Structures are given as C-alpha cells and as structure tokens.
Image (cartoon, rainbow, N blue to C red):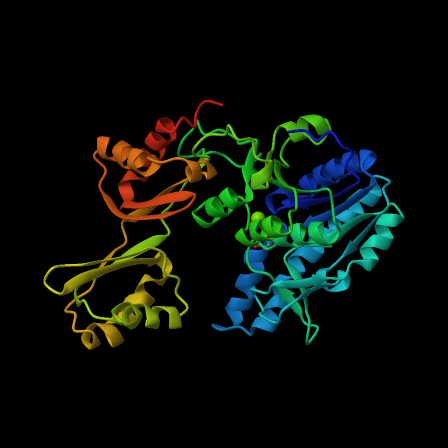
Length: 423
Ligand code: ASP
Ligand code: MG
C-alpha cells in the first residue's frame, strides 16, 4: 500500500547484512540520500556490520566463562558505533549533512539489565535540533545508557529493530522502515515452501505470533513496541537497487498495521510459522493431586527456562502424564533439575525426553470470527498421515507439535490447504 499523504519524518533501520561491507554501506548511503531528497527529516538506525557482534562476543567470552555483563556491553556496543560512523562518512561524502550518535549520546535511557536492557525513555532534543537543521541523523541501534549508573547497555540480540521502532515512536515519525535482507514478511519460510508469498500487510498481533513462533524477520520486542505505540512499521529489502523509485520500493514491502486498519476480506490464515527449537519432556504416572504442576514447573521456572506447551490429562487411575516443552538448548539443564529434585519427591518413576520434535503454527486474525479452522488443520495433517503430539491454541493461532521429520511436509500441505499461495 502506497501512502497518499506526504511523509515528513522517517526512521530507517539497516541490519548487519545490509552493512556487511564498504560497498554495501555505500549502497545504504545512496538509498538514504535518495529518500532524503524527498523527505525533509530522516533518521537512520544501524546494526553492527554482519558477523561483528558475534566476533565481539567471542572476544569477551575468550577471556572468561562468565564475563562481567557491564563490561561485555561496552565491548559489544562498539560494533554499531563503527557502522554509524562509517555510514555518516559515506553520506557526507555524497554531499549530505549528516551526524552520528551512539545510544548514550542521544540519550536512549534503559534499565540496568545489561545484555537484555529495556528502553525506558528517549531524550531526543539533540536529534530534533539536528533534524531541524536538515541533517540526516545516524544512530547506533541495539544500545542505550542505564538510567542509574550511566553505563552503556545493550538490548539483546536483534535489538536494533527495537531501537528503531522506539525512536520512531518517540520522534513521532510517519513511518519506521526496517531494511533487511528479505523484502517483507512471507506467508511462510520461502526456503521450505518456494510458493510462499510476500504479504502486503500483516497486523501487529499476527506479526507478534509469527515472531515468537519462529519467523526471524523482526525482534519480538520491536513488534510489541510498534503495536503498543502504533508505529507504522514496514519491512523491506536493502539488497535491491538503491536507485529504485520510492514508489517501487514501497510497493514491494510488508506494512505492519493495526487491526482496525485491516481489510476485512483478508484470508482466514495469514501465515505459517515453524521451528525446531524445542524439546518435549514427559513425566508419566504422576499422582493427580493439587500442586503437582507447580512442583514440576516451579524448579524449571527458577532456572529461568521458558516452558511453552503443557499437557496434563488426568487418567482414571488417579495418575496422570505430564508433558511440556522447553527450548532445546535448555533440555539438559531442565532434565537435570527434574531428576535431582522433582521425580522422587512427587512419586514418579521416570522421565522421557524427545528432541525430535518440531512446532508448526498457523496464524491469522481471521480465526477470531470463524469456526472449524482447527479441525481443518487436523484433517489436513491426518490425510498426510502425520501424527499430532501436542496442541495449543490462542485466539489467533493454532500450534501443533509433530515429529520433526514432518515439518516441511506439514508446512507445505497447510500452506496449500489454506489457500496461501494465490494472492
Ligand atoms: N548487532 C546486534 C546483533 O547482532 C543487534 C542487531 O543486529 O540488531 O544482535
Ligand atoms: Mg536483525
């Protein structure tokens, strides 16, 4: 959807792949310059050059198994400082007035949770002043400064998306354009289903589900932020020719919208997400008494392990099987905890784990007003002979856990069955 009104103030965000080399930084500069020619106020938020954040993390971790988090933030935040400076040099070399800032200079104020900080507020007087003078403002993503001790903080991996959306909210920008290596949000992962289609629009809520269920396009927190503060957020590709007209750029993107702005005739299902990030734990023969779920999951929560799906169904013999999923990387930690503390205490005998699972989810706001979506999903899977191990639903999504080898087949069959191929 191309907007009719004139845009006056925009935030652009460029990810690491878009800034991976000097040649790509020049391309970004060309693109920003083109936009600046028709939009008076442009702010650019940058990630570190591709691979740089990983390199910096490795450096810190090579010195200590448990590096100090405040010091680590000082190290990893430097990647964005470099790319912000480089982009500014490139823009100035094209003859544009530009200035770069780190998060602490802006200031992007965060809480003190180093490595996973949350933005509390943004003091953007300096940026307003520069924008007023017609300057392109380049800001480091991923970082801020802690409110109490004025230390450099970082927002967690992928945090530049959140920096950009937060800045767009605080500057009251007309739009936040997130440039990345794909040209939008797809009905599903195109590597799994080549017929996946770019969506012109998706609602924040659907995007939130897509992000938490496996789509890697945007950091989840940025989507939450955008939804909460109603920031028009658009995902588009930085790999296309920077000379492409603005109109053409906009027509090949995905706009994330508020539900009330959505076209009512949209499809039942907007997208399919999938991942192999989880593992299943089952404790059979658990006595069906009050407090059992808490006894099992309490120690898991204490270890800071996220539990996703949970299934408990009381049998007629007073015993129940208790199953749940945890991130695959936390499986060993979770089972160790359970074996040490829980199994004996609750009178269970064993515990089974299953790493060979995947989760496939269908997502769509259209589900709110329709019945039979779940049964259609189950029918489609059963026709392919795919067994469902677990199910969970919310108002706008249905997730199933399947044997891991069926993930691609399930995604493709559901994609076709729900009519996601045709535009
Ligand atoms: N450079 C940081 C990372 O790699 C932040 C970002 O790219 O958004 O996670
Ligand atoms: Mg990213």
